[in-house]
Amino acid sequence: MYSIEHFGLKIKSHKNDFALNEGNYIVVSNKNTLIPFNEFLLKNYSLFPSSFSVCYLKKLIEFYNNIPKAEITKKQTQNLIKSLNLLQKLEAAQNNNIKIEQQSGQKQNILPENINQLKLNNKICNYINSFDFFLDIEGHFRSQEWCKKQASEAKQNFKLNMEYFNSLNKQEFNAALSAGLKKAKEFSEITDLTPYIGKSGYYILVLDNYNQIYIGSTSNITKRVREHWCKIKAFDRLLFPMHAVKTSTLSIDSFRALDTTRIYVYCTSKTFDREDEFIRLFPQKFVLNRVAGGLAPTQTISKNLKNN
Image 1 (cartoon, rainbow, N blue to C red):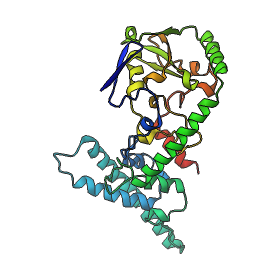
Image 2 (image 1 turned 90 degrees about the vertical axis):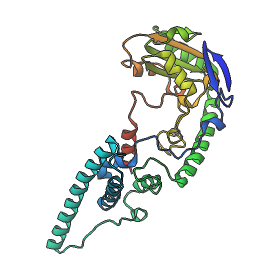
Image 3 (image 1 turned 180 degrees about the vertical axis):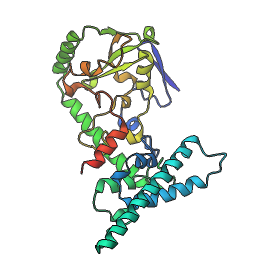
Image 4 (image 1 turned 45 degrees about the vertical axis):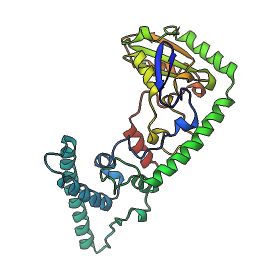
């Protein structure tokens, strides 16, 4: 176990990786840390062909029914009820469509259950195929093919980000930082985080080696900064949006402790209200924040699938 002291905090690491590199950036895992597939389908079933949803829900319900009552979780019980209700709704709609087609003499147009044959929306097909349903029908794990593609895309994205950071002008960055801080007079530079344990407010992390800053808001400044330094960014969250190789910005959680060279804080009980305001004080090219205001992952997934 390795350890360093940075801004008054003792930081530990098993691999002595206190600064970002490609090795500690990409940690391959098949675990799905975003919304499980079953829950996403229950909320966004209209995005999927009815025939596929019916087939999937039947298998999901069969899985739930085979779980011993003593072992099934409250969430699984809730999802079972939702799945049964949605299945009844979809089957009723399917039967109604068949009756209408039979009465009108039109040919029945039911989409095939084989997802690889679906041509209406390739993004939907790719999303479905990103899960390993043989390993877990609920969709908590990614397929091997998806993991290979994600690792390749994350590697490309990492190199593009490094090239971009290196292209930024150091003097321009420092001038922009100074100009923004003059407008945000509430912030003060600190060299020790220990007095801010349990203190709420806003913080600015400066990564001078990358000409980047990150602005955050929290109920515990010291705890939140430590989380940024010690947290390993989930493999399936490296790119935002997913597969955005050329446009995804590295997450602040991908950087390590020594990448933060300066810290500014503003203590206040009124957190989160002004985060977007402070972000807009600095040129976007120098800001690491991926989403101003914090858009939920589920929203971004559904939005991406709808945009063909």
